[in-house]
Image 1: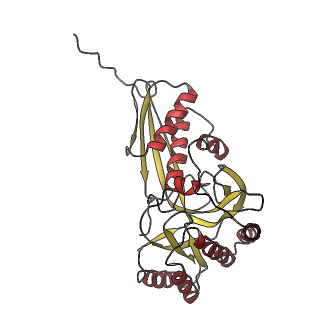
Image 2: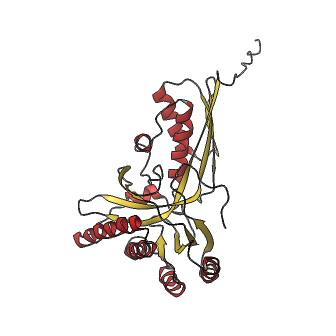
Image 3: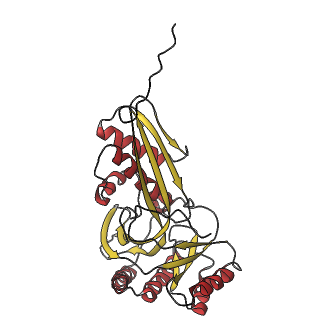
Length: 310
C-alpha cells in the first residue's frame, strides 16, 4: 500500500487564524435573587483574563490546548458546525485566571473562544451574539459585556449596563480549594421575599453609586452582599476583612459568591494608595489563605492586561 500523500496547508486558503480575549471578574459586587425570582449578579471586571488563538484547518481535527478546556472545545465545535465549516483546527487558550475561585475563568475562556473562532468566520461577536452561543453551554458571568453590568447568569442575559468604576485595587485572600460553579448553581435555594426586596434595593443603590462614581457606596453594597452570602457559602475570613477594611479606610469587601475568595476594595486614585495597599497586604497575610492583588479593568472587556500584580 502506498503512503498517503501529504497535503500542504496554505495560509488563507486551508488555514485561517483569529484571536480573541476576555477579562475575568473578581467575584461579584452583588449577587442575589430579585422579587420576580430572577437570579442576578453584578460584575467587577479585572485586568486578569483569557486570550484565545484559533487556526482553522479545513483538513484536520479540532483540538484545544490545554486539553482540559473541554467546554471551549465544545463551543468551537458548535460554531464550526453552525457555520457549516469543514475540518477543525487548533484552539489555544492562555489564561491567568485561577480555576474554581470565583474569577469567571470558564466564562472568560468561552467568551475569548467565541471571539477568536467567530473572527475567522466573520461572525457576529457582539455581546448579545456571544450570549446566544454560551447559553446552551452553562450559566455564565457577564464578562462578554464591557464595564460593570447587572447580569442574569442562569438565563445568560444582560439585565442592565451600570457603567464603569474609578480605578480600584483588590487585595484578595483565597481561602483554598475549588468550587464547581455549575454544580453550585444547581443547588436548590429559597430566598424569602423580604431578602429579595433587599437585593432589589441594593441593586438600585449600586446602580446609582456606579453612575456617581461613588466607590464608598459601591463598597458598602459589596460588603452587605458578602454578609448576605454567608448563609449560602460562608467565608471564614469575612469578619476579619471587614475589620481590616474599617481600620484602613477601604471602600469595602468584595466576595466571590460562588468561589473561594474575598477581597479588600481600595481606591487606586486616593492619596497614599501605595501605603494603603502595602498595609492591606500585610494585614491580609496574617490571615489563613493565599494573598494576591488584582486591578479593576477599563471599559474594554476584550483586552485583559498582560502584566498583573501578585
